[in-house]
Image (cartoon, rainbow, N blue to C red; front, side, top):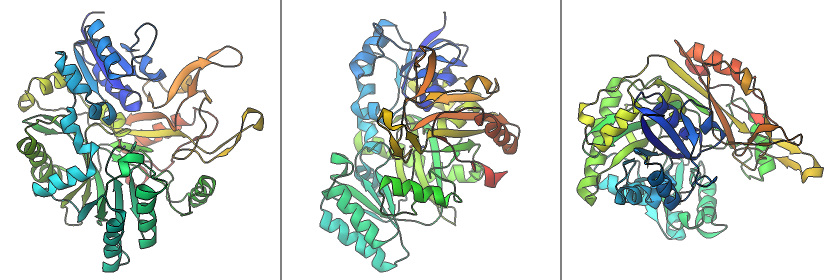
Length: 472
Ligand code: GLY
């Protein structure tokens, strides 16, 4: 096939959505995805990358694949590869690759470093301090609750912890026990929790804000409203059952996940707030990082923000990538050619780009591996489901009944043979599929998403029923 060859490095639904965005470019002939999943092969022009029948996973193997296939452009999804230096390794070989280098990926890789940097740049952050001594950390937590027992504290492991390293505590007791569990025993996040950052929980509304940088120019991307809690607010019984089965002491805590769905455009991120975030946060961070370290920030930058009642933004965290499942509802709305846009990032030409977005609404619902019982004959028992322990390797059915213009991005699936030697799709993770419907209104997108997701089935399948509900 003629046209450019692209490699997308990602294993999840975000990788499916990035690959799909590249595949829509007329300049692109083939999109390879690695490590990928079964969904990586289901879109036009897209296929799994393989070398000698195996999917490349390590940075050296991915580089060998790029060399062998003469890949024109590589785009990296997850933070792990970026922190390990995939961009440094590819660039050293002369490859064109979009993403921040290892030196810049520290903005996600170390929460303590980032908060210190932002404070030095006068970029607004909540009151916060870093600790490597658990006794000093506990003292600070006591101070937060002594000031006002209604305060909350957010305790964050310094290093990468698969998106689970940030714990919101609503009482002093909970905060002290969280510090103990991260830093002393059982060391919940291993070495990532040797240092921690503690911040006072701010009141306001959380906002995920995405921008694209070529090192000099920073362009805002459109955003999505996401749903992080595992259960809808009215699912109190399910929350209790989840915590009981998980052995969690806080029985009413609705657990955080990587995301259960979302929609785009964002309902209250308007032009004025976008400008304010760009001026106060995004541009000073990218420029200040260059001035402080000598390293340019190139790629997607994703700010987790708290917006106060006065509409002032504060940075809670920085991620060095697109969000998952945010990418699944944002990228289908991008009308600008994604290959040309990625090339502009690499060539330092973002100042000449004007992004175009569809006015349509996209709403995504994640189907996850929920509470399930497996027969004792197969080593069974009841598991609470994502984001706790869950079963995988469950056959999935009904995808063929989904309307052709509804997108199904795969988060955790693989093809395999069932007991009758029939080729089928199986679950491989906590988040399994993100179904994305579009519509002229949010209501239309929502109705179509929920009509279609009902047609898909697997043992233990669960999804939130309230995505977008309060905004239609
Ligand atoms: N959806 C949250 C994240 O990607 O970090």
